[in-house]
Length: 519
Image 1 (cartoon, rainbow, N blue to C red):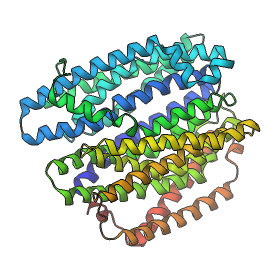
Image 2 (cartoon, rainbow, N blue to C red):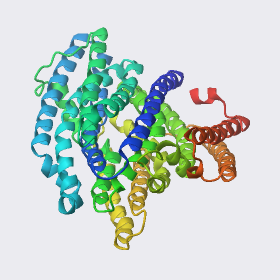
Image 3 (tube, one colour):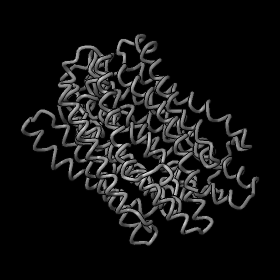
């Protein structure tokens, strides 16, 4: 069982690694060509809002509600019923998202004013650019939602590679837009906005035909009265916040960042992009792979297999999440200088991005754990419990953001955006703790033997890794003073490689073996 999960996670992670490499190339080029502030900040907001809705209608809420119902029908072995359900689900989703996209285009000024109140009051040009770009990027939601429906079906049948490749295509399309489309516009970030729309269409074109090989390519039918579609809708409504709590917290940060100095949106965005690397490589991979498995175990009333898979996911998330957080915390400035500090992205921007990256990295283990804990509820078609946790988390994030950011803003402290990053991290920790507590109280999570030994092994490996990384960083010195980009990249790979090898070697020396992750 766990061997298959580990293999599927490895496939998903390998494809995600390609995506993150392409993403780094995209972010480096974007920072170099466009810098921070002005129209670039407007694009980041115009991209973030439909991206949040993508998490709701696509791989977030919709997927979490859709996959358990799909697997429930599969367990019955009725292929005709399965095809009928997919047809009606695709038709209903398309109709709903079309309406949302239409409203988004029509109400773009109102939406922009909600998320950028500071710009609406004091920066009319930036506000106008945000509104115009929102009208370009909103239809992206339709393409990406239908693509994610296809991805959910493919994932449920164990076809993880092609859906995991779609972000690579997205990043490559945006790189092409920066190089060839953006120069055609007087305000170049508008080319990026059009690139987002094109990327969504290409991702849908890539995945849709793959459903035909399963005999499940949808014929769009109005499905609002279909019993299973109504079941998905009933399950989906409470997940609107719970499956996207991190994105909701980012939007909260977007509102507050519009009140801070120019560039704050950009620094938070670039920090989040670096945080997304380990989350996408490990957290999302584990969560994506484990959801269909947990839903099948629940459908088969296999409580032991369900708890065992969940325990496996938690250990794997900690094994990847804690060293990732430690590495980003210790190497925040070297990483931001190496990835972004070129062209129009100046050393000051690099330092400001490092501030928010350092603070946001504290939440990485919790973000990863939430990727495993949330599917544990959705697989049982329990959407109310994670919704309760999400609402409490968002409320905590708002209070923490106000508490941390307000005094920094009032006293004009440099790096005030760091308060937003710290609030996001602490809210993520609170969310993971709530989900774990609910599972334990319900008796759904029964820890397997060996957690004490595993914790000591993990602690020892992190201590050794931190010692190696700090020692090498002190020996090398300031990254911003290294003039040659190739030298920055070389030394960063040396430090990361040494840290990773020392971490793995300590785990092996302490007795942890790869086979232990399969049992």
